[in-house]
Image 1 (cartoon, rainbow, N blue to C red):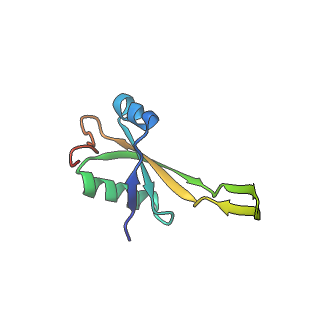
Image 2: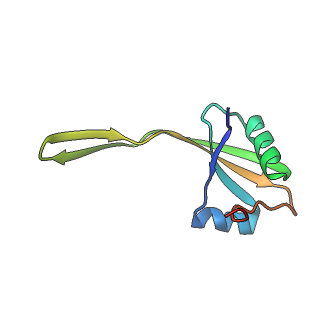
Length: 96
């Protein structure tokens, strides 16, 4: 089971990483905080102080088209905000 799916790279998370040493990840919905902490430490080689998680449910949408009403939804997502120990950094752009 892969715990970390992908990092969140937005303007807001980049500012958080520069100011407060926090990084965001989209994680497996079944993963708990201990598994997320272990995965970040093993993958990036940094110390983790704190892990905060958020569950986002699907967003349901309806469109009115020529052929009728189209219903759809987005996938549900679990996000994790990881506080890294002072002095450690995660560089997402090093292997591009």
